[in-house]
Image (tube, rainbow, N blue to C red; front, side, top):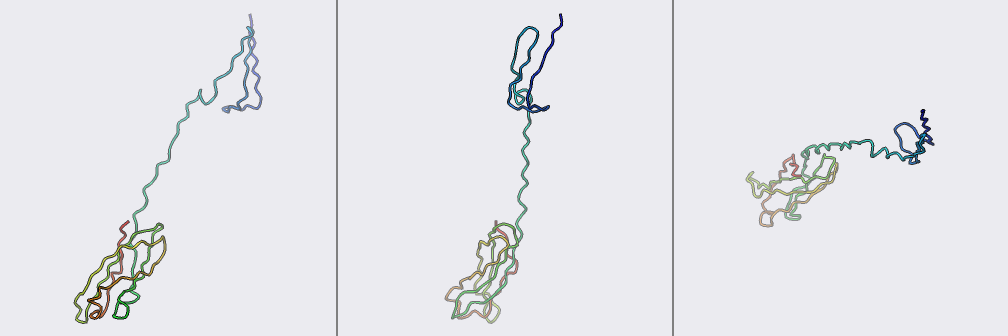
Length: 144
């Protein structure tokens, strides 16, 4: 006895599942629905490994104006070289006419990515009449 099978499929290509039912008919008149390709074939999912963000670079600071009696604030221009917003620590030293330190300050300032910011640093009132000059540390440390 010879059995002949006929497979009827519309719009199918190898390895794809068009969703159209495929009927397999044999000499015994039995038909069956195939299992979906997704269930028959295991698919591995690979997730891309994320690389850690590069460490932040330190910024720079330049003194624009020193504090005095008329305006008791030093103005510093802070630059952030990073591609992301950063918290930068700026340090300013208020010095008297003899070169002695009167007041040292350290402030954390948020600066937008690739931006510069004019930041005003207050000098304590009791020192403003004795401030001869201000010194800013030119490298501002990236805190976060």
